[in-house]
Image (cartoon, rainbow, N blue to C red):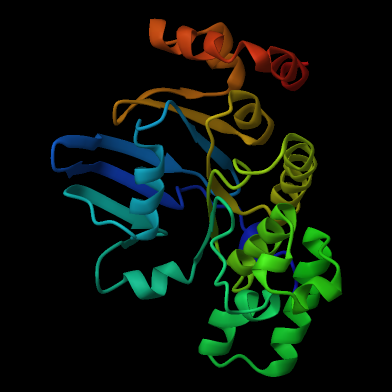
Length: 265
């Protein structure tokens, strides 16, 4: 099975994922106000904003971990619903902070769990496992270790392999590098960017770091209090803020200015 899916080289003209009037409320709080968003094929969209702004809720809505109170979500022309969710989930890979690996399974079994469930042949599984380990630069002997025996960076590599195992159309990542120390985080940022470019998948990534958003994103979506405040490039947010909050949010991350300048150069 090739690393680059045939789907990745088709020239799409319509969004892969579309939200129309999607909202989510929990007792005592509005997690997401009525929101319209489209995610284009082959692009990386980064959701960013302060804690509690709704970015992780939006990601969970996309993969069906929580159910919207209103509005609709469509993937490749199919409505996300209880009936379509099992099939559509197989077209989405999901990576969370710390990896979310099953502690009682070794790395190989974590990665291949769904492929084995779906009845893939052993040879097909082995070939795909070898491809993905090479893609994320994970040593072969690490696949026999359990999550507790792996470093944070290795766990994230295994989690990414698991998300990519079924060759999904969409990759969803919820602060995948947030728990890593700065040196490992910097290394994985560059590797992830190269992987995104190589695979040409539709990526939706959540982060709180504006420099990281600028590194990955074709489009940045800045959120506040459950709504989209501005979307566009990093240059748009820095040089053409839509309202005072955007300017304050950018300025608040003053320690990232050097990285921002590098991205804009």
